Structure formats: C-alpha cells, structure tokens
Length: 275
Length: 275
Image (tube, helix red, strand yellow):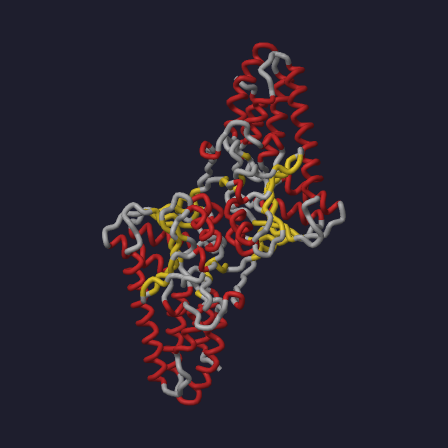
C-alpha cells in the first residue's frame, strides 16, 4: 500500500492536463523522494514494487514514466531511493538546459517557428535562442480541448517573444509560411516513431509537403528502450459537446521519415540510412 | 441602394457560421427573388449592379457566390431576375441530388468514411448511400471554433447513421482507419486546387500518406472559371481565447495531387494527366 501523500501526487499527475511528459516525470521523481521520507526496509521495497506498476500507468503512452520507474531500484534503503530520484531530477534539468542550448542553434535570424501543443523542451529552445539575441517569431496552436497552447502563449508573452495563436485546423495553412517546425515528444519508440500530442502527425505531413524542416525536442529518457510503434497504447479522454461524445485520443504517431532530427541532450539524432 | 429586406438577407449570410457555400448560394438566390418583388426598371438595374459587388463580398473565398452573381443578368425586368434566380435554385437542388446519387456509388459496404466540417453535398451522399441500403460509419471532426461538425452529427444521429465525432487534431490519427474520405468545397480554382474549411488540407495529406482515397463533393457552380490558387483570398474571423487573439482563417487550399476526384452533378472530375 502506498502512503496517502504519495497517492495524492499520483492522482495529481493523472488529472494534469496542461503539462507534458517532462513535467510528469519530474513530479514522479518527487513522488519517489516523498516515498523515501515516509518508508524504509520491507515496506519501502513493497511500495517501490507497486510504484513500478503505478508510475507507468499514470499515462501508458509516456516513455518518461516507464524509464523513471526503471531508474529507481527496488531497495529497502531510503538513501538509495532519494539519491537515485534526485539524480533523475538533476539529469532531467540538465537535459532540458542542454536541449535548449543545442536546439537554439537550429533557429536562424527571422525564422518562423511553428509548434503544436506545449512542450517544455521546445520552450527551453525558444528561450535559449531568444537569450542569444536571435529574432524570430512563433506560430502555435491553441491545442483544443485543453488549450495547452494558451499556456505556451502566456509564457511567450511574458518573455516578449512575438507569436501568433492559431486553431488546430489551421496547421496546414500556417506550416507553408513557417521556416522551422519544433515539437516535443511523449515517447520515441524503438523503431523511431514519435508519439506526441494529436495533431503533430498532420503538422509533420504539412511541413514535409512544403519542405519545412521538422524537428522533435526530447530528453533521452523519452526514448523507449523496448516499445515498437505498433504497440503504443494511446490514452483517451473522451468528452461531451452539445450532447455528442467526442473521441479524444491525446497523442498521435509520426513516422521517422517526416522527422529531420530529434534534439536530445546528447545531440541531434537523425534517422539511420535504411529508413 | 438595396432595399432593407435584401440588406437583411445579405447580413444574415455574412453572419452565418454553420452552413457552407451551397446554403449561402441558395440564400443569395433567394435575395435576388426578393429583389425582383421589390424593384423594377432602372432601380432594379442599379440594385443588380450593386448585387454584383455585394453578393461575392459576403465571402470572397466562395466561388458559388461569384458564379451566382454572374448568373443573374443586369436587367430592368423583374420577371427575368425571378426566372433566373429560380433556375439557379432548381439547378442547385438538382445538382445536390445528383451528387448524392453519383457519390453514393463510391461508398462500399462497411466503409469507414472520414469527413471534416459540414458539407451539405457530403451529407447528401451519405443519405443516398444509406437509402440504398449500404451500411457504413462516419468519422467527423467537431470543427472548432464554430462546431459545424456537431450540426452534422445531429443530422447523422437523426438518420441513424453510425458516427464518431473527433477533435480536429485527431484527423491524422483517424485517417489511418478510414477507407474513404469525403469533403465539400467552397471553391475549386481554375488550376484545380480545392478551397475548403481549414483542416481539409492536413486531412488530404494524412489520407494520401495512408492510401485512403480522398474525394471532394462540389456542385459545378463551385468551380471558379477564372481564379487561380495563388489569388484565393481567405476570409479570416479572429477571436479571443483567454486574452489571446487566435488567428482564424476559415479555409485552406488542397492541391489536386492529393484529390482522387471531384464529385459534381455532371460526373466525377479527375486530375488531367500532367498534374
């Protein structure tokens, strides 16, 4: 049985609608720290075994949660759990900074960067490029029905980065005028497919059709070591509009062939030749 | 000066958000009938000259309005105006029936038909196929921000045609599982580009990527005799969400190469070989 305090964090993670895979992984790591403060010995071991199931089940589509749960060993020692969870958090923070640094080099003066939904890694790249004095503007979708795009617009507004919000249906229209596409990822499968907010795949297609380079920003803990694209389970959160049930799969899957590169903290991954 | 009654119809047309190019053309034709009941002689002629400008300006993207205005001669005779407007309405009704008839032949038993926004021509095809006893289901987008898709879902619900509503961002995800795509058009340019509700172009790309045949249903009065794709003016209706201005171009433009055929009342138009 997990302590109530830890259950509360898992519940908060489950109901989160705006933040993505990076935020959830960080929050998950904090849940491990909390656990290490509450339990020890056999109780801790049992709780960690439960966390191995519970953490990935918060959102089965996200590789970050799968990798986090594997990162923490099953042990009775609170010190080891605390230290590993702390290491995960530190590595994740460093990864984000480094992605910002590497990714910002892809942004040229006067670029028009198109993005979809809210990726904290993409925000980091935009921030880093802006700090380096590059001038560019951002086109972003509102991202219905949870409007993560509006949250990103708030961030860009406070940074002073010029931006335009569009509806999700206008992705094709605005991709034509973009010079660079940057999106995040919730999962990069073993066979190189990018799982990200639904709408990413049509954006990739539109960019491909117009010759706009399409990059994905993802910490290496979002690369799934085992999962293949055909095994991806996509979380759905249907809702009701005017009496009609609306299907709402949160993610879609973009094949490698539409992706110019994946910006990780280790460098930019490009498709192997045979793809 | 146009009579107030006619101005009121034009205003109604301008503020209409759910119905498309066919409905607007019909309503425009009714405005001409109304005009023929109110004016005659020189006054009628002057009003008709004004209508040549006013009718297309209701929505510059729509070929149907352009063609309607050209269909009505400048004359002082109310009888001629009434007769031509009546002919337009009759031809439009016949065209829709015939499109339903022709298009329904493209639907096979157990098809999964994907569509975007609300096209009355597509609805006619679905109705006609359903009446012929074909069993199929429909995937349709809610079509933010005006939710024309919900209006279509209401129609399908009352007809008993199985359907699922999805968000606009899920077009790519659901196109994979479709066996046929059917959309309407607001304008087919002289060089063969299809102007339709924004989101149509990404749907066409996703269908192309998955080998799903993509057809457009359009009365011949939606073929523009002069306009080229690069001259298309796309109407915008920006709105505000949570303090942010959201761009909202109503239409996008899909190149011929992604369209398997255009279902008109005269038959199915296919791209000429050189395209």
